[in-house]
Length: 320
Image 1: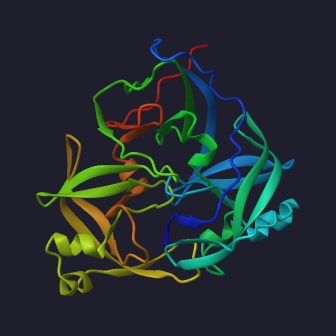
Image 2: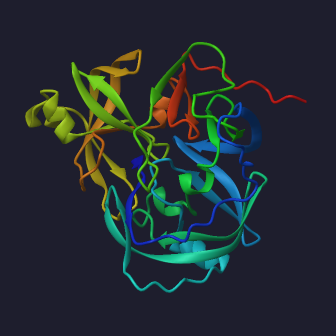
C-alpha cells in the first residue's frame, strides 16, 4: 500500500478560529504549570493516526497530520456533513505528494474532538488522493491549527494523543514523561507551524520535518545526492509508490540510510524511501510514524521543543 503523505502547503487565507477549552493566560515570569487537558483515542491504521470527531453533530474521522499546514475536509465528507462553502475572492489550492488540487473553504458550525469543542471552525476542502487510494477514504486532516495551544504527547504504545495545557512562563521544556529523555529545539515557526528539526547524516547537516501524516520516513533526492547516493544507486533499489493529497502516485525507492543523528541519538541502517520533491520546501526529509515507533515523541509547542523518550514507554497514568 502506498505512503500516506501530508497536505504540504496551501495558498490563501484561513479564518482563525481555535478550539475552545484553552489554557488560561498567566503573567510572564510565573512558574510553569502543566495539566492534562484532554485524551484523544487514536486508531492506528497502516501508520495513519485516525481520530474520531463530531462535526456539525455528525461523526467523522480525521487523520492527525503534523505535516499539514491547515485542517482539511474532503469534498465528499463536506457534502455528507452538509457543510456549505464559504465564498473566497482568491483562488485556493492545496498540494503535496501527488500534485496540486483546487480547494475551497467551508465553515463548520461546531467541532468536537475528545471533549474539546469549537464554534465556527474553518476547514479547507478538496479531493484527497486518487480514486481508489487510502487517502481518498479519509474524511479529512486534523492539523496543528486545532491543537497547537497545547503540548502534545504522541503515545503510540497506548494509541492515544494526550493534550497538556500550560499556565505561566513555560519557555523551558517540560514533560511528564520519565525514562531517558532527549530534546531538540524546533525551528522557528512559520505561519504553518511545521515541526522542523536539525538532523545529521553522513557527517552533514539536514532539516527534517516531524510528520504524522506520513507512514514512512522519506528523504528527497537532493539529500540523497548530497549523501553521495547516485541516480543509478537509487534505481538499483526496490521501487514502490506513495500517495498524498494529489491524484498522481509518486514513485519511491527503498533504501537503508547508514546513519541518522537526531540530537544525541544515532539510528543505524534506518529504512527510508527516496522520493522526488514536487515543490521547494524548507526541509530535506520527513520523519514519519515508522520513526515514531522507535521513540516516544512529545511536542512542546509552549517551548518550541521536540522531546524524545528512548527507549519508548507508555505515558504515565493521569491522577485519579
